[in-house]
Length: 426
Ligand SMILES: Cc1cc2nc3c(=O)[nH]c(=O)nc-3n(C[C@H](O)[C@H](O)[C@H](O)COP(=O)(O)OP(=O)(O)OC[C@H]3O[C@@H](n4cnc5c(N)ncnc54)[C@H](O)[C@@H]3O)c2cc1C
Image 1 (cartoon, protein in one colour):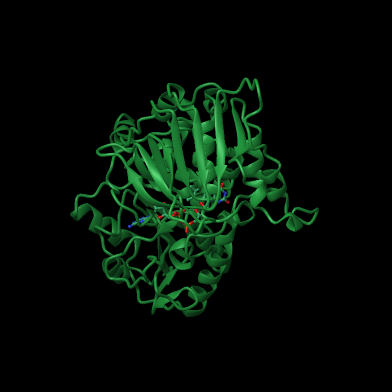
Image 2: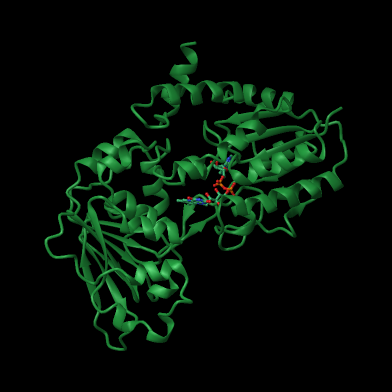
């Protein structure tokens, strides 16, 4: 009898784990259980739509999914049903690879004010995530503020600062493209609480800001004066050389409509506005005096990091990271990826976790004659949960590719309704 393994989540860490498991033993029966109707986690809903080449890694994962011993159960959320305990009861080993799906709290007032979003919400919105398609941010505004100095902050800024030509041939959701196209946005501020040489942007992302068709990227006035001149030498990593080469003024007679301004040494203290955001107040970290800086803006996005969701029945720390020892949570239960390691690293970073978890499982696994897949199907049927199988996903995937316009790689389905309609029509 094949040993039965369930992996919860279907992002890079889940697929790298499955891939490594199959290298250890091609007879493992592996079920990938995913909350959404589509696999690949943040490759689909995090990676920016204008970064298609990054998404190509999903082709490697397609091959894993194509393995006859691997099945996909989309639309199944272990936070609701079936629970981790139910899954543990019917599999020999279980891997939790659910990522970190919530925004880290900015710790200021008025979180529910309209016009203020966490990066998770905004990124999921433009990427067509079914739970965020109705976010509908008001972009009939002049100024946006993005808080954070990492690549996710830059992704948000770049999407806002891009022209529709730059976004048209991507897989950005149609509704987001329409709102962005009609936007009156002129200025995007990107805010760091420390200096430019502390920013976490990578070279590619910062260079892209310098190459936008309709947006000039500049530094806030005085930024260069605050940099230690001794550090501005040839040893400076490339991303900082590019960033510090930006002007402090928009070029005179620039034909570009938009401006992205990088501001540093500012910590947010208060969102302004009654029902809608009208601005945000910052503490100037370079000043010992109480002279806050206010930026008036109709949109504020906080991109300061991610937080894991609590999974019922499992212990997490304050950041939502699962408590584990070298990826082992307890007997027969393992964790991989962001939920184990925290929200850092690129897609490839998860490969190591996957390999480690697969080795541990391969070393420890014993058969307990678990029913696995067939019993999961029975449970889902009893609970009236309609799941998306891998055959269903292949149909959805092909339909998305077929529905794409022009050079765009795909037109994503953004609701379960659309997906079920497609599957029921066959
Ligand atoms: C906005 C953004 C942009 C990024 N861009 C890049 C980039 O350009 N290049 C790069 O290399 N890296 C990028 N990364 C990092 C990369 O996406 C991560 O390293 C990687 O996705 C983490 O993999 P994971 O499997 O741990 O989590 P995820 O990719 O988040 O996958 C977790 C999966 O678990 C599912 N899940 C969650 N809860 C449940 C539940 N209760 N039941 C069932 N399923 C559940 C989720 O729906 C999701 O599909 C980006 C990250 C973000 C946030």
